[in-house]
Length: 252
Ligand SMILES: NC(=O)c1ccc[n+]([C@@H]2O[C@H](COP(=O)([O-])OP(=O)(O)OC[C@H]3O[C@@H](n4cnc5c(N)ncnc54)[C@H](OP(=O)(O)O)[C@@H]3O)[C@@H](O)[C@H]2O)c1
View 1 (cartoon, rainbow, N blue to C red):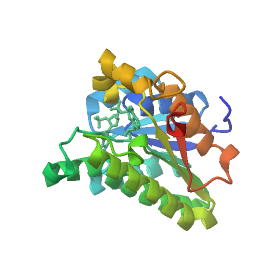
View 2: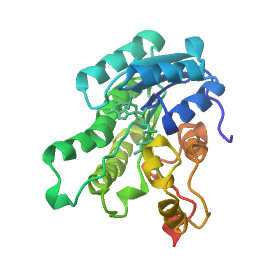
View 3: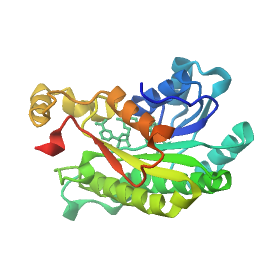
């Protein structure tokens, strides 16, 4: 890993009971950060805490990122336990495959926007308030290639992720003078439970991989390395950027 210097940094990773978030938490703990993870389901958090074995350096808090009371309670617990927040990684997200936009129920639109875009806004705004007091901080928002390309069944998710990329630029411009950098990471398909319905079907898998010059799907570790660069001091002059992690698929 390129990045270092995370000892005693306090990092919140949303949606970290499994998948990419869990692997980011593992790497930050390995690099001696104090790590806070959240997810909606207590059982998933318990399993993640047992897996990570973070001891006093790990705080696992059940929270739905689009519920304001949950987010306020989460940030209160961070303040009480650690007194500061250096790093926020807005990773929580979900998708439900949808019909064409014309037929999408408003309740489904809201549900997908909640976990992806609204949750990112709520956590980023709370983090920004703490980081402005500290006059430093790093925020990374997890986007997706779906923000840039209209794909069948992924329309609402793509709109949410495109919103995250603009939110990233707005926050970056507003917070740069407070020494807070805000960036995004946009991966192609990553091998996690989230995308299992696609990659576990050999014909769909092969079809996707045929459009990735690197010849394989991303591994969670590919995303972890990009995120760690953007939350490290190695990227202090980079803000408002979206780093695409896609094995070259956007290049063709
Ligand atoms: N995997 C891919 O192919 C891929 C590609 C591009 C981008 N991404 C993005 O990468 C991020 C992580 O994806 P992943 O593949 O690691 O997904 P995952 O394996 O399904 O994990 C998602 C995590 O987010 C939590 N979560 C979902 N909604 C939440 C909410 N409203 N509040 C709090 N926690 C919530 C889940 O726990 P609970 O269910 O208990 O809440 C879980 O811990 C997402 O933002 C996703 O959009 C993934």
